[in-house]
Length: 64
Image (cartoon, rainbow, N blue to C red):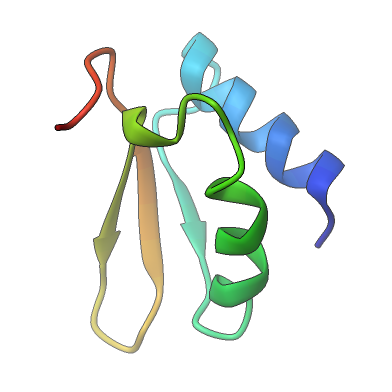
């Protein structure tokens, strides 16, 4: 997983091409490393799943 891939996924979430994206427990830290550097980071909502996976969704309004 690299920064280009993460940006592509988040852009698809933002544009509505994807409703959600699941990141495995093993890939979480690497995915998050690139995610927090984005200007629209506060629009991205991660929901922890049983087993350590995280499902990410893009919200139109930023969280506080």
